[in-house]
Image (cartoon, rainbow, N blue to C red; front, side, top):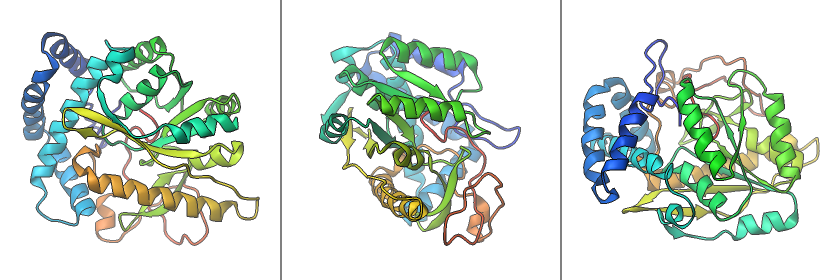
Amino acid sequence: MGTIARGGDRDVALYSSLNLFFIRVLTMLVPRTLYPLCAFCWSALFYLALHRQRRDMRTNLRVVTGRYQVERLVFSCFYKFSRNWCDQLLMMRLSGDRLLGLIGRWTTEKPLDDALAAGRGAILLSIHLGNWELGGLGLAAKGYPMNILTFREPDERVNAQREVVRRERGVNFIYVDRDSTSALAIVEAVSALNRNEVVAILGDRDGSSHTGVFEFFGRPTQIPLGAAYLALATGAPVIPVFVPLEGGRYAAVMESPVFFRAGRRDRDREIRERTGQILRLFERYIRTYPDQWYNFFDYWGRALEDEKGASDERRTNLPGETADHRQPSHRGALYP
């Protein structure tokens, strides 16, 4: 959860407590079979009203798909985001088998089971694609010890709703400061991994204090490095996971683990190579489900359209970097 678009004083929080209230009432009164119709009406309203978000999504999709005509995908993104939020509010009332019933296809949990059997914990790394919240709750419902790195939302009532839902399902959350190194959060995350637990992170948005520039869809992009640092510090594998909508239910996909192993001298090279490997996987899933990658802001920034960079004093320099590029300021770089 979080603000999906930000631009100075023009912040747009589509999931403010007021909007969540209306969606929650809808999910209580309307059966899930009618969610597609309700989501269509809701998304049409936002699609027509939010010109800037519509424009920025169009820009992002042109980069991702390599096509100029992407308007159907733009509307589909608003629609599937609305579907996502109907289900997220429904999830607040579901647990156990009823919650797991929202997932129609599980690939495998073997990478996670193997990681926990090794005794070093596991880092689940996902992106803002599909229903990432369902993935964490689903694994908690199956008995996995889940910890989610997250930012606080500007709307405290939204925070309160999230905390109730997650605590009731045995999910621990670790709050990260948007503007500092969050030393306490790092200690908590490392402690969770040392207890052989699972730490879940989102890794496709700049917004933390530890980032590096990597090629992402052919563009220099600020990528958060929290998962890489945790993996190097603890020996825990990084397991990419995705929860896209497929038809009326979701797929829970778990990919092979990525191991970060390096001595002090090879640390930067290991971060660059392994993170690049993960980003290629992110690209594949985003190209497969382009209308489920929910970034309602200009992801790469209009400066990159003209091959211009912008300075970012918070970024982490890695070998071979000669320019400073960053995404526009926005919410939710880690698990929202």
